[in-house]
Length: 78
Figure 1 (spheres, rainbow, N blue to C red):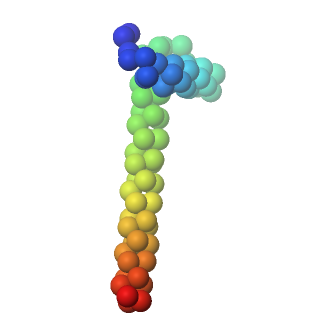
Figure 2 (cartoon, rainbow, N blue to C red):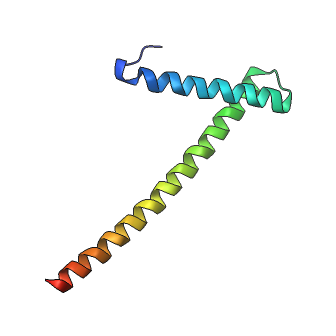
């Protein structure tokens, strides 16, 4: 796999996390079928990504609301 030098660390960390999840699922469920394990890891990773996306969206909305409130207070003072 060819990657940019600046992305190499991220790719290595991703590979390490995938291997750790594969090992955990293999031990937890007693599966040896690599395709089943990879499917489970892919599904689990997507759920984690969706959770993170939802959390970021909620955080962004909270920041937006706080900034709107601060702008309103500044405008009232001026």
